[in-house]
Image 1 (tube, rainbow, N blue to C red):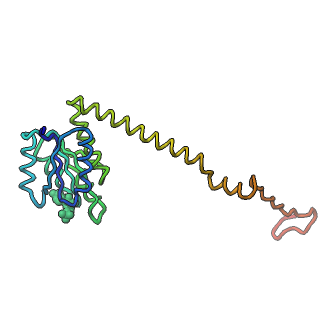
Image 2 (cartoon, protein in one colour):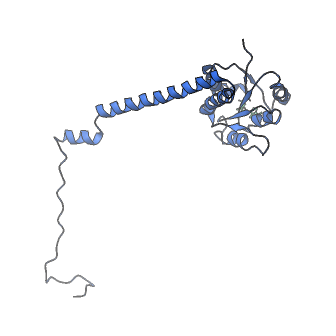
Length: 207
Ligand code: C2R
C-alpha cells in the first residue's frame, strides 16, 4: 500500500460522522490518507508529535476538524509548514459558530484554510486537499476535472427532471380555472356613486 499523502485529524470520535466525508472524497480521487483522533486540549503531546513529524512521514496536507472552541487546526498549523485545512464542526450549543470563528480567525503568520461548517465543509476539505495534491500530480488533476464534469451533468439531469414535473403537473392556479369550467370569470366592477350636480355640498366643502 502507498504511503498516505493526507492526514485527517479530529478532536473527538464524535466528529467522525462529519469527518468521514473528507475521507470519502479522497477515496474518490484515489488519494491515500490516514485518520486519527487527537486533541490540542486533551492530548496536546500527540498533536505536537503528529504535526512535527507529518512532513517527514510523507504527508502533503493535513485536514483538522473540531467543534466547540476548535483550536486543533491552529495548533497543528503552528507546528508545520504543510497546508492545513480546518473543518469547523457544528456540535456545540452555539451550532458551530464558536468552532467557525476559532478556526477561521487565525492571527497573521499561521494560515488555516477554513472550510464551511459540518458535512459540506468536510467534503470540501477532501476536494481541496486533492486540489493541492493535483498541483504536482496529473492523475489527480484529471480525476478532479472528471468530478466537475459529472457534477455539472447531475445538476443538468435534475433541471431536466424538474422541467418535466412542471410540464406534467399544472400549477394550482391553472387547476382552479379548469375546475371552474374554463377561463376564470372576471369579477364585475363596482360602480362608484357619483354625486348629482346641484346636490347639497358635503360638509366643509366650499360651493
Ligand atoms: P466530545 O464529543 O468528545 O465531548 O468532544 C471535538 O472536536 C468535539 O467536537 C466535543 C468537541 O470537542 C472538540 N475538541 C476540540 C479540540 N479537542 C476536542 N475542539 C481541540 O483540540 O481543539
